[in-house]
Length: 197
Length: 311
Image 1 (tube, rainbow over the protein chains, first blue to last red):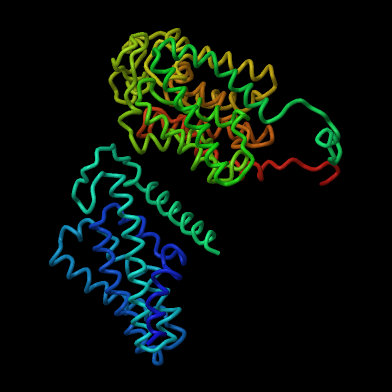
Image 2: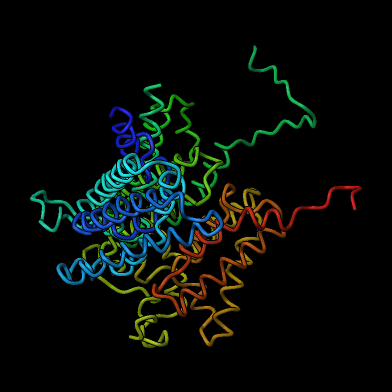
């Protein structure tokens, strides 16, 4: 039980996919312009990550080693197709806002990385916890980045105007703002870590 | 006694030149352009310069203090960054915009890379590019010269870009207006004559060589001439003189060898021409220098001088 919990928490802090493993930056930078987009993307990624981890872990003994990556891709792509169809059916605005980044979850490094590094070597339950932890870690990072960018870049939070009068710096909702915020956050986390040790 | 006893490897030249003396010489060379800019746009320009310089130096001091480094605020490099940033802003832009730009220029453009000598990009231009992306509305409104009030006037280059005027006759300007600064534009860039005077002083003091400014300006002229522009108009308008003389020649962010400097100047000039003629912005000097800055390590490697006696 304790081990399972550790598989879950490692993805949130110690091995956070964005801040420490530095994977899956493309969607992180692209969809973090608003908190709503970030929440939608996070939900999609958690769903795909958890289920693909579980399925790949179940099939880990029957997947031939030489063609394992195509097998992973097929599994991941199935779940991404489900997400995409559900999104198109029930939240068309979100689908429009996220655009090509939903189908691109198929080649998201975090998901492929967890399949290769964890799910293909571990039983189902730890793989489930690993997927969930990594997904939550990704969501947390995305939420932090998108909050900073939306509040300072467009003066809103999750679509609602915040009641403090200042002039939003539009650079933060542009592409360089994403790189700036991510870089400064990574630097800040490293700095806090170095203070502790 | 101890600090007078310098132990170093040969050659043992003793020169009075230091980082501080070079930086302050450049700052002196910027004085005429600054004074004329204030004369053209009024005391708002003076406040902008003061705030930018103060913010740059304060940021440098706070960061160096916080990181327990040697405090080098007095060497004039932060002063120069603030001054150049102010020169690159419209005189009536809000003071907090200038202060924030200076903060960004020093904190992200310079100190985040490790301080003076380690920055990849010219810090003042990093500040300007940041402000341009963050609060574009303050950086694209220019004031009419000699009015000392908020009366806006488009720069010659933006008139050309928007197609509102295709020749200097349409703009009601002469080459003398462009040379002396009777035109809309940023605080320090309008008076080309004052900038050239500063440049000649720097050449005389051997702080800069002719390689970067001349190749930069000439390549802009040739490029615009080939593509049916008016080369003299393009030389005298926008921030070309300021950029070519004072910002492209920054020691840290330009190539070391003379050949490399000429290549660097030509790259800057071509990029400026491309942005001015076909780009989205009316003026391209700032981005041209920033892009060329990224090529500097490559240029330095490409034109490595042959060692004496080696094949």
